[in-house]
Length: 414
Image 1 (tube, rainbow, N blue to C red):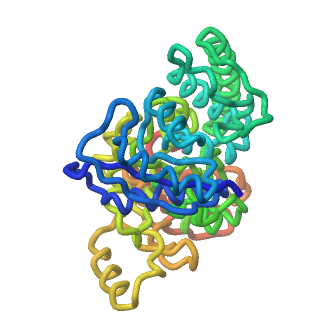
Image 2 (cartoon, rainbow, N blue to C red):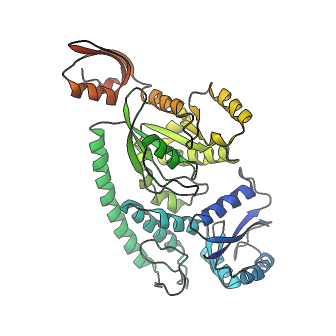
């Protein structure tokens, strides 16, 4: 395994909602997510940011012996580095240095599975690499297909210039447009059924995929690992009333996601933009749960969903099985008075009933109650009612089925 040192430089007087310790733990978890051997992770307090290397000369020299003695092959700087800063640190430490953006791209490259996911990763790589091109800055290593920034000697070394990168970017954007067009056709076909779409969103590692698997009986990759899911996955589920919806699992959010990554992965979040209901899955046990909520809501607002955020998302408060019994009882009592906050455990299934009922209420908030009579022979119409409406009451007679339902006026077909 590749020996890795993780450093988080931070300004001593900075005002951040997260503690430096929590931010360091997050980047360390990101590093371990791609099987790098973290020999040490340290906080680096700064009085100021140095333009030539981000950190001061004395701090740089402090880590020379540590890097040499532990045969460190990669240093992760948990901060944004300019090309000049990255180059100077690599020269001083005689090892590869990457920043948080490059680390996230590395993870994306290893996790993406669908054609669109792979293309999005490649586009993000190219956009990032293009920003690295300054004068003689030509030694950045990468291979097409998203092999990333950690490749060692022996791999193909390509001299990147803006013209070649721009040509690749144009080509990939064209491929992405074709993939998006196909997916748009699939979405249009779904809308003709139609099933409402419920999107699971949340901070990375909040438990979205575990919840998705439990609700849909699917087998999406779900591990205690950051960015385990990078490709949107969709399955059909039934709500308590019998109404059917499509549940979508999406890529996890993270704090301070660089602009090129947000833009490159916007298409990955298109399912969220089309969703009828958004469920925000939160790791409620995490010490930074509130800060993570703010990060997710800020990204959703930036994507054009501010109105939904302001109205209040459904919150699946996950991992309640980790709380002590007294604390859990207090949480459950508090949340009884907050209908959109659903304490649950994706691991045990506790709290699923409230979540599903909450989704159903959100889908039918603009619906009205109507009485319908369906001929017993019209099975197709009956199936459509159960798909589109919330069935409140049903009475079967010899000739007709009498139904009291909540349904949106636009969905009425009788």
